[in-house]
Amino acid sequence: MKLTRAIHFDESDQRVFANPARTGEWCISGGFEFSNWAEGELTGKARQAFANGWFGLETSGRVTFVAVTHIEASEVETLTRLLADHFVTYYGAPSQEAALPVAEEELNQMAELCEDHDPNTLLTVARELTQSGVREAYRVIAPRNAGLDQFAIHGTLDED
Image (tube, rainbow, N blue to C red; front, side, top):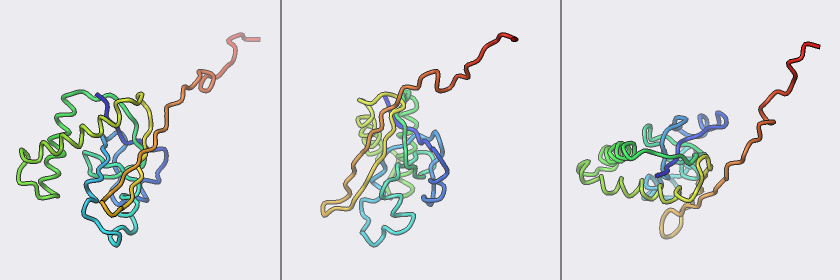
């Protein structure tokens, strides 16, 4: 199974999100956070989180880029419980048991998004509010093969 982890190329997420996700943190879309929001609530850093932020499962923070990678079943189980707890704490789910199927579905949707992509594929999300709710679109940035000559220092061991 594949899921995504937060990746940072610079420090911009530290400035644009009120609560930035940690590098390496497991992430899902997290569009559920905005399901009852109106256009007037989308200002400043909240707008940035809405517009293109992935949801970090450990910190509930946001990140601009995520990278596809393999995940172990035991990790998925832990993340499902963590997300179910989040639903209880922040969204009023009556219990972890009641929230588990919803959390599981969120993780399954993310796994489906990742399944056809190679490891290290980057994903971005773009959201907009529509009459029928939040619409998400995804951009895929395929990993590029790096040649050894891009990293190796060429020289000689001769002492001439």
